[in-house]
Length: 377
Image (cartoon, rainbow, N blue to C red):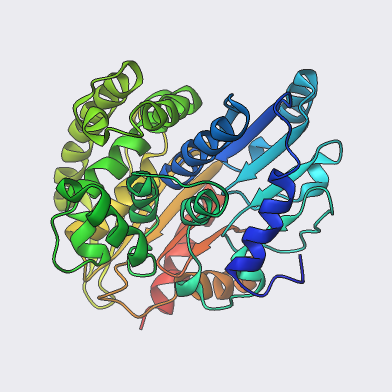
C-alpha cells in the first residue's frame, strides 16, 4: 500500500490481481450504494463479464457499519474465489479469508493492506483533496487498462457528477462528447454546467434506487446501467426491465424533493452572517434523503452552506449532512469537522472538502450547530 506513487501504480496493483482470475471463479462485489458506488459496480461487472463470461454477485451497502460478521458469514456461504470492495474505507483484515482488493477514495485511518487483498486509495500518494478522483473514475481507467471499452464513459460520468469531481475528471467528459455527443452538448465543462445538464438527472436517477428501495434499489440501478451500457437513451426513457423500475423510483424522488425544497424556503434557518442554511428534515419514507437534500439546497443556494439535520437517523442518533459549492465558498469542511471533533470527541463522520456527513447523539445537536457556525468566517 505504501509503495503507491501515482494512479498508474494503483491500476497496476489492481491489474495484478484481476489477471489471476479464472473463468470458473466465483466473484463477489461489495460496493457503496450511492451513484459513485453503483457506477463503479456496473463498470466492474462489465469488465468481469468481458473477462470470464459471467457477472459478479452484488452486495450494495449503505456504510462501513454494514460490513459486519453477518455480511462476512453470508459471503462465506457462497465460497467466492475473489471479493472486491468499492467506494468504502474498509480494512482488508475484515476479509481475512478472501482474495481481491479494496478500491476507495475516502479519507482513511489505520487501515492495513494485505498482499492478497491490498487497500488501494489515491490518498496514499495524493494529499490534496481536490485531486482525489472518485472510485468510478478509477474503475473506468482500469477498464481501459485491461480491455477496450467503447461507449462506456457516460457511466463513469454519472458517478463523477454526483461526487463533485467534474473539474478534476474532464478527460472522461471529453470522451463522452466524442462517443455520445447527444448526451453532453456543452462548450464549457465544469461541475456546475454538468450538474445542470442531463448528467445531473442521470446521477439522481441512479441514486434514487437506494433512496426508494434500499439495497435492492441499488441493485436495480446497477443492472439498469449494465442493460443500457450501449444505449444510454434506454436508461433515460426506461426502455428495459430495470431502467423502467429506476425511472419510476426517480419520479417518486423528484416529487418528494420539490416538496422539501418548498419547505426549506419557509422553515429553513438562514444565518445571513455566515451564509449557512440549517434545515431539519421531516420524517420520510425515502432513504438517504439527508445527503440528497443537502446537495439540492447547495444547488439552489450556491453562495450558502447547506446543513441538513435528520433527528431520526438511528436509535438516539442523528445524522447531519453538510454541503458547499466550491466555486462560491473557500471553506474546507473536513478541516472544520476535525477541529469540532477535538471539542466533541463523540462525533463520528468525515467526507470531502465540499461534502461531509456527521453522526452524533441527539443531545449534541445544539452544541454542534454552535461550534459549526463559529467555525465559519
